[in-house]
Length: 430
Image 1 (cartoon, helix red, strand yellow):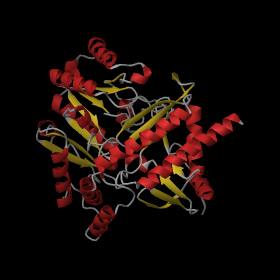
Image 2 (spheres, rainbow, N blue to C red):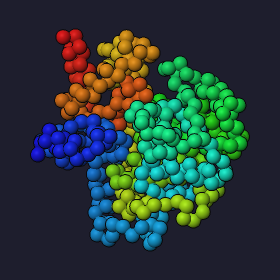
Image 3 (cartoon, helix red, strand yellow):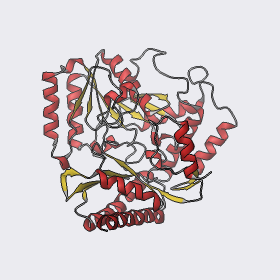
Image 4 (cartoon, rainbow, N blue to C red):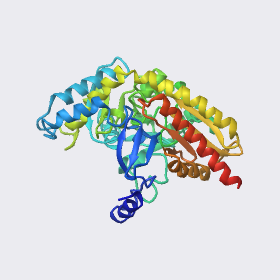
């Protein structure tokens, strides 16, 4: 079967709501490379959307999962638990930012982690309200869609959403929205929509993912920490896309020097095996009664051993340091692109190996260029590059290369991206 035939079968078998970016069907992958069923090779600048931070099939992760398969695949952690899940929780508690004693729970997906974090915050505070941010992404379940601040394609046609959810503007200097304006909007929200004594939690991505790779300024994160402390509100940092060395720190909230009350974790935690977690202050995490948290597949044995291996790889191979080196290299390459195409590249954003460039018309931040973004993404396949877009205005190219990518392949991917820009420019000028 070739890619086209498989795509035709897929379109008949799957509901159209579960689309795919490329009609490229993976046959195998290794570290930062993917080969499709036709034998075509691709440099992977997506990492399964920040999942394979340790590369595809890292030998240590592969060996841990293979050994676990010789023992058992499932017993249900809430019936007969196992040592690997205890080890993982201990590690997450130790590694989470701040000195406050921590507890963890293990679940299966990022959306599950977010839902459970909200449940825990509500149980701890006895309050209903949750504040999230425009442009934020927290999942596709009903509650997490309500928290998500991006309509298309995540929320369109799926309402109504749960009540007592409020959205604030996210500080984005490139769009003229500063920290002070966002904090003023929070104060206005407290006066006009919900009093702080009824707010259970504020949830924020330290760097927005789907929203466009906008980092929250350290001062803004610190101000939110002060507001939450003043009013007894639980501060949830959604580290699902930013976690596990992606931003040059193990967790992106470390860049601002704050201690979140709860953090949600998934994606890069287990190198491609489904597992997620909520880790937070013990006094808050213990608010839920026994049986109130969990799930049939929560903390699967395969996910636990993979995650334990990933945490070892991050430390042994100094992936936080490598993330910074990747970002530094790509910053130079993207600045070269900006010099070549100043009318298109509006801003470059680098937080470790969480890298993006926002595409505009005539260099104007107020004129997003989603058509150009679509053209570049479409051309990537022809050039053997897996590349992603994001942004509320659908005009941001994001790069999420595996942190283990060899430098030669990182350069090769950057060369491909430059060639894609040249090809799109030539087609538009023809």
